[in-house]
Length: 153
Image (cartoon, rainbow, N blue to C red; front, top):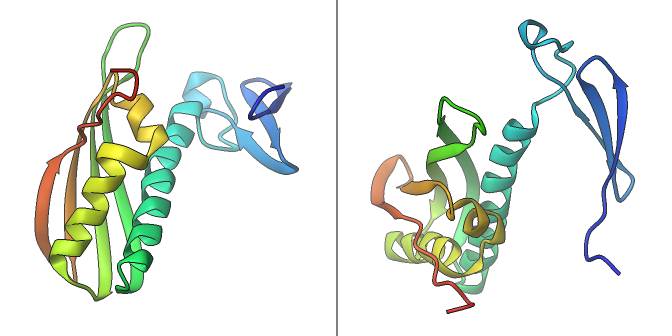
């Protein structure tokens, strides 16, 4: 039996609807690409997944470190190659954390996510260089690159 399942249905044009665990997600593309702009593209959803996966890690890790995280926001920027298959080649994740936080612990939480825990960014890092910036209470406190240790090694 599969670990995860998705059902995709073509809605016409370039519009698709995905049903995952009862959650309906629309995918489409811009008008100039033949779509009707009713939802994000698959690559845009992948950017969301990159942010969501690592953000969940960071929240969980900071909670275990007894840190008072009040808000977490992220910005993701991606560069793609220009020939087919078009894919991510460079990504920058910016973590914007606010609260009564030890900056070293905030840095460690991000590093743990991007070296050990985040499965989405692990997969993406196989073809895409991922950098990060950690901003705590309005100040950039750390930068680095995702560097996962391959569990198969």
